[in-house]
Image 1 (cartoon, rainbow, N blue to C red):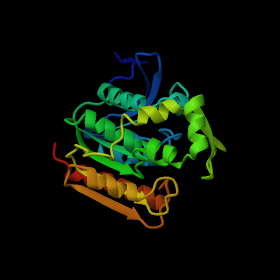
Image 2 (cartoon, one colour):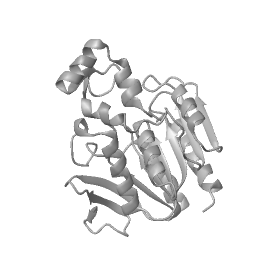
Image 3 (spheres, rainbow, N blue to C red):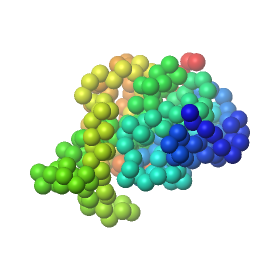
Image 4 (cartoon, helix red, strand yellow):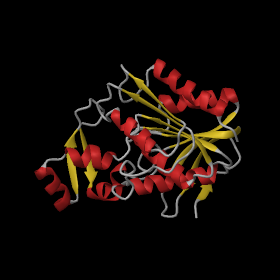
Length: 264
């Protein structure tokens, strides 16, 4: 069972959600009308980024409920990102949404958060009335990590259980460590190999100068979705983060339009 601490249920503000294994998930919650909006951040990011805060302001202005949270090993939540797996992050997301929201929800996921949001939407299909994915990194453990390893690197990962790779993207971390468990578990949650059984409206935004996740991933995702109400926005000069003022405006406009058209 998931437990909530600090008396945050039913109140607007920050709180901590306890998981059965003792891990804690930090969250920020804004009360309002439904459909609510839930934001899922990217890998090695957190809930205090520009996209999360821009969406919170949109929801506050509209009077919509809004929830953002730090995934296991990220931000103010407990744990080490090195120990995380796709299955764990997805299960945590479902637990957070079930414990801290009610009624219909629109899930918004950035990068790896797009994969987690989609897995959560599949699990909570009756409650999710819309999905927005920004530079969705679906299946990144297989297609962007494993597929990029050479023979020696794969052998190291398989024999030692982990691998350290240089980060050439200009990020804050000079090296990234990955566990074999992340790759193995990721294979249990791959989505782009088969039909994605979601029928809610979906909006996909992807920069065509994204050096981390190929923009064609979003095209493939759209093809695999069961929903006919899928729209793709390709930003020709957009990078992976899509956090410039104009990018945030586009994201808020997309979510605003989706809120206006969703019938609950």
